[in-house]
Length: 205
Image 1 (cartoon, rainbow, N blue to C red):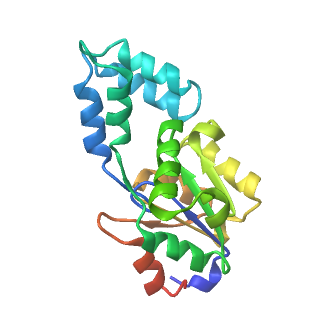
Image 2: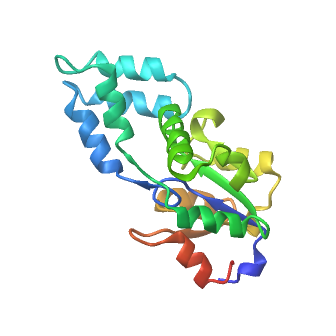
Image 3: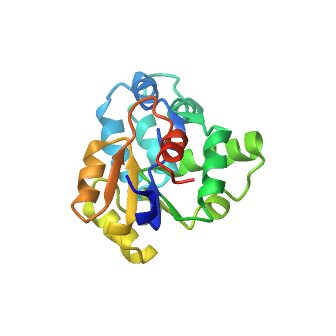
């Protein structure tokens, strides 16, 4: 991999920048429900902003077991988020003067609110999107999600980048394949791989 050929670095969020427990959290949410399909139907709509947080929670509560309350749903859903290590924030600080840095994430309002609280409390950071990135693309604000081609096309057009000058790093092969079809170079972030160590080893910073 020749780091000098790239002008842009595009990062996924979960399992790349932030540590998450997606499988555990989904199991915890489903354990609150009488009908698991309520979650499976509501989440895709929530992640592209077709429904807001109140409706998402109410849809789950409508199929919840007795005595389950909104706070139970929120805590179970947010249990997915473990945190962002300081080493990855340091990596972004070192990369930003050399590359255009972008974040592209399938995410939702509850998770971004949690992340902002975490960054303020644990890292004294209250300007995450501005401090570390040249552009941030959250699915619930864009109205599309990976691996659908329109979210990548939106990013290309909005950021004004050339895909061939861009390395996209994600932990999901399906997302990487969709991006590669549009000309992006890609790197699969495998389980337990540290993205800061990978980019350091490849000479990006």
